[in-house]
Length: 309
Image (tube, rainbow, N blue to C red; front, side):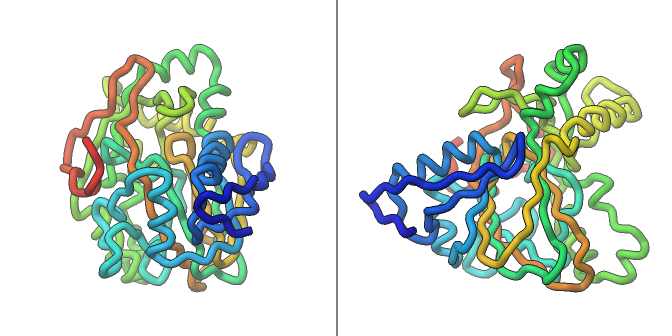
């Protein structure tokens, strides 16, 4: 169903799992949607944390135009180059060495991670390449009371120069594209101290801020910090908190980056997988005590181009 400005439609919403995920029907994000339809999509996104729309015919201009209805955009990535004349786009392309097969929330190594991520499927392998999302709100709510109280007080340092970004000897020998992409990824090193628990600026829900960029816990020894991160992270990735999506070409996934983690499964060998990603700018996370995130290393101001301070 196509919507035009001034012609609101009632979208369809089908839940996909008990705690996260929904498929939206009846909206064409490549068209000029009414404010009411965009508001419905946003509300579904806030409620279900990640939403999926099939059959979305998007080019760079149309994807950016729709994403801007959700808020001002960031550049494509703080360190990875965008395609020529497409500064707001990040290519998620297996032929260029891009993989995201680790649990993470997007770009938490800077002090203002994106609020929303929009990923459009362009090339999908014939088998494999699914993505899993986890609800970091229900993960927080499932913590034992004593652990929840501790998490509310913790501050965790995130960085892009962490162990997942260190290539193995085999990968360095066999995958030049992946090696080059990893080097570019850490070409500027960022470190940010985030609250372990943030208060969502739109829903007031509390969620865990963890994932693959989390390195250490302020005030704890390296080993104790790793143990705390591991314990909390295990609650995030419990199957009960997840949903798995099997991609088709022209699918659009939109997720609330303030309330989720995700993992792109690398089980498609040498087959080609490509997505095009744009991100909506978000504010610095704020902890239960009202303290915001603090940048410790690296200036990410260029990443927030066009975004008010």
